[in-house]
Length: 115
Image 1 (spheres, rainbow, N blue to C red):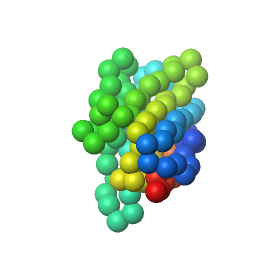
Image 2 (image 1 turned 90 degrees about the vertical axis):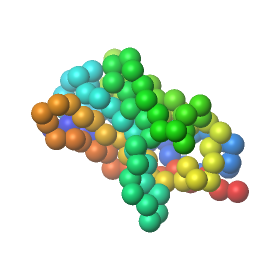
Image 3 (image 1 turned 90 degrees about the horizontal axis):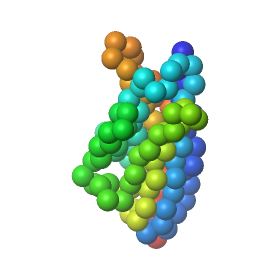
């Protein structure tokens, strides 16, 4: 059973930075596509970034500001968030995906960008 634990959220002022971490356990990390999603109050959950092997993709709203990376030795995926804006405020979730199996989600970590 895959288990994901996010950390690193918090309060930050506009223009600030945070680094989120998601620790994976219960299976072979390198086989999974890892992604970060976020959900703001009253809005649908949206894809922020994905890391599939050495390939990464980003939502247009975070390109140039956020960086996803993975450390297969530590079974951890990170989301470095720079130049944060109030509209980045959301609960951020980590997701692990492999073909043929259900998606696995973490419990989420709150990011609040306030003036």
